Image (cartoon, rainbow, N blue to C red; front, side, top):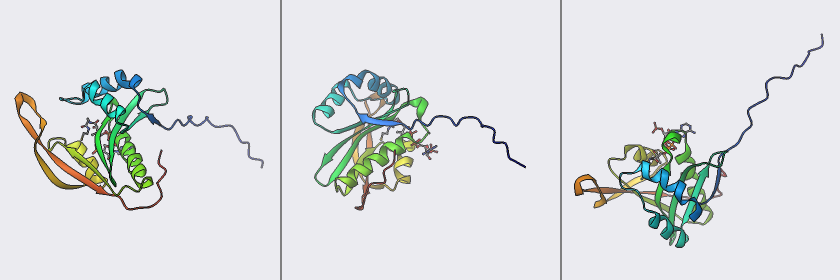
Length: 172
Ligand SMILES: CC(C)(COP(=O)(O)OP(=O)(O)OC[C@H]1O[C@@H](n2cnc3c(N)ncnc32)[C@H](O)[C@@H]1OP(=O)(O)O)[C@@H](O)C(=O)NCCC(=O)NCCS
């Protein structure tokens, strides 16, 4: 008996998220995300300073070109410092921060940078869990580092990830 091959439903087109450097023209959209994600958001000036300084400012985009998230990192001598990683609230929990982080780690590896540093609020359990799962270690505390409501200050936990050498993973 001859099998009759009926065409099945077409698979959904795959549009993996894209990445590109952030530019000044993106800042209205970036600030719209920033302002809903933080009680004490970065200002336009903070982003402009980072762009002007040549920091690594990367956007993660949906297939419609919408900004899903971004990461800003400052390269240093043999190390990288993650200054800002943010995902649009409606896109959280889908692995976008994980992917932004993985691309940053790949970049560090490609540049032979040995460690990635960041600060995080003790109250930001979600971010701390993300970093801990990726292997970051809590290595210090900066007292009263962050502004907090009612004029108070919040400590910062310093976390670092040692990056062994080797080829990049080539993640999307
Ligand atoms: C912290 C923050 C960046 C995390 O972004 P995110 O995109 O939601 O993070 P991810 O989706 O990559 O990982 C978070 C969760 O999704 C899960 N996840 C990871 N990869 C996944 C995937 N491929 N598919 C589905 N879920 C995934 C993780 O297990 C994690 O689970 P949890 O919520 O139970 O801990 C985001 O919540 C945010 O922007 N917060 C406000 C700004 C902020 O606090 N930034 C950090 C400052 S230090």
